[in-house]
Image (cartoon, rainbow, N blue to C red; front, side, top):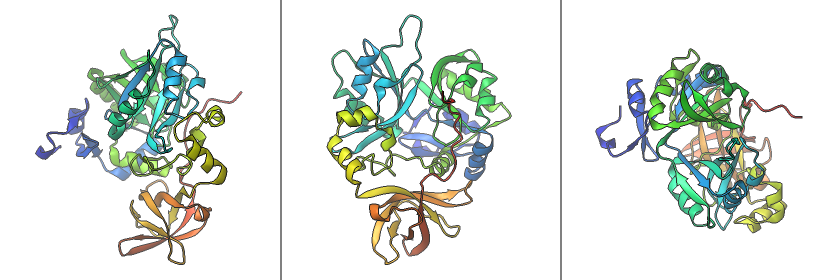
Length: 384
């Protein structure tokens, strides 16, 4: 239950359902959100093995609208170094908005809606923005939009994430078209008669879907899916441990306006055409780091023992010199051990480099590893 002191927090369309389900509500990005129901470890493991339903309606949903696809794609590319223009109808892509110094304003998902017979979707580009950054993103985008392209926010819509290896089976009973999607594809459908925009994407490293619906349909849809035998509710706690094991960045922890995509090991999201054209904010810094290497790199840490190391801990070489900092850390239920990610000086960012992590008076031995601790379970489209 939300406390009286939290009465000024925003509430998602699923707030009352969370309370009925016994969700422990906490403040997050200005919203009252469930951190857990049954328990973080149980919800984490259920997601990895079956399917879990997450309320992500606090995220920002918005779209660019213009006369044609080229106009909205080019508008997005003014801040986003991804190759947005090359998106096919029904395809989505991860990217980020950059400031003039090459720092990350926010990371986001952009989607080109599937084509319709009348061509009505050709002038639209859909976006999902981080909850704590959506106002900043909207301001940054509107500042660079050309004439004829506008940004429209959609606070009237809810967003539900259904994640896990059995997510397809649960959703396909009510929406057979869901099974036809592959990772990073999206389409407009009906789920049990409710109009919905679904994408095969998520933030757990597992297969799954994100479902955007009108607010009035959020609770009926959530209850429908929770009635499926594979599905249980999950909160922010499991969402965090799942994404950490999957090596996925959390804005404000692992990336921010001082972090470049090269430092953050996100250069795969910068399109080849964009690198060659160098036509995005901060291109000089980013291209220099690509050529010469950044001063620091994001890495993972395999930690000895069972005690987790949290964000803020310092990273030290064996001689005691401070070489970096932990940005996210916790216990990985799937890994069965503490996991963490953070930044170290590039010369120490070599796999299996031994380090010492210090948090207060406590020290833990660790070694540098890939920040991806679990194998992704995405259903990718076959090549060829």
